[in-house]
Length: 427
Ligand code: DGY
Image 1 (cartoon, protein in one colour):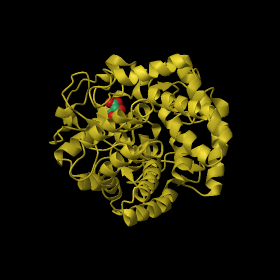
Image 2 (tube, helix red, strand yellow; image 1 turned 60 degrees about the horizontal axis):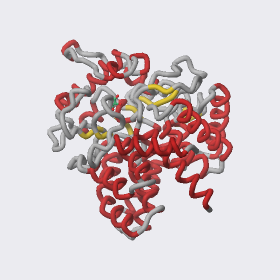
Image 3 (cartoon, rainbow, N blue to C red; image 1 turned 60 degrees about the vertical axis):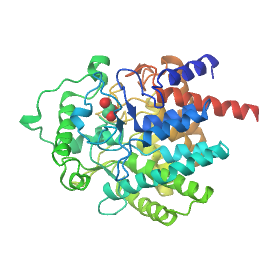
Image 4 (cartoon, rainbow, N blue to C red; image 1 turned 120 degrees about the vertical axis):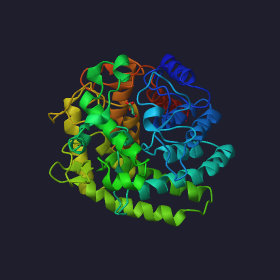
């Protein structure tokens, strides 16, 4: 791996630092985002462990009283971004968005503990109860029936905003006449054909309107809100994070929550069955209002390995799909199956490759002994960065980079992998 790219990646993290928290990329995303910060901490851990912890600590400054950690924390009003704090109306300090995002934090903390010393264990122990409260929030507010299926109330909560997974849930949303006019800022910074459509934005804002009108009563939103879908991404990432939290509890001799985490894991393992779409032969998103499945394989379906989910037969089907998909792409792993008609190679989550998803896929595949697949996906990610720079996402067919530039999590994953390579070369 190239030392000049390593330097560049380090510089991106330093430049995107706003004094204790990191923006995903300047202008397009000018605030602190939840899972972006978790991956930023992973990147910082390579050269500044104190700063890595600070990233996680500032993220938890936005935690709500009920345990939720919001997907965006608005520390100041920035006209570059829409929808900002005035639209969300969280009523919290600091102001924030009013739903969450994939909870990768516990897994990042585990990495920091496994690679660190006593100071890291102390930091981890201090954050532990906050992470536990957040997981508890997911298992109660987003799984109100307690059947092991953790849902989302907005496509933004999945982090995979416009993935076709959400089309079946969004189609059911009628945009009200009184939604009001608004001005998007994202399409001023990035080509409109690389971003969600106007109709998708109208529907995103319709969900926000419902939330505001019930003062973000999360139980009411889960019961009667316009959108409620089971997301294999949240399911798998939370299951993995629960396992890592359990590991931390044992490792750090923290008794609190042990039994509870055990119960969550058992319930989620069972719940994964609800995502298995036998017609396609993979784990898919599901509209919990209608029971309808999404109908194609995604990069997120591959996180079953990372979560330790699925039967041997199910995993074998995923491996078959992965080979067929990678045969059609120069660079894996695409966020939507190119064999499906909804595939769009450069539109955000409807086809492009994302470095941090690849990082999790590679970790899971490696742990499960699927090393050939893992090596291909890792090598593709590095080639994409070498060819097109630290972009937000990449076209799986041409390798072109799209969306934001100098992107924090793309830089973080590059740094992480180059650090691992240096360690293994030194060994
Ligand atoms: C955006 O603004 O596109 C974000 O992805 C929402 O979190």
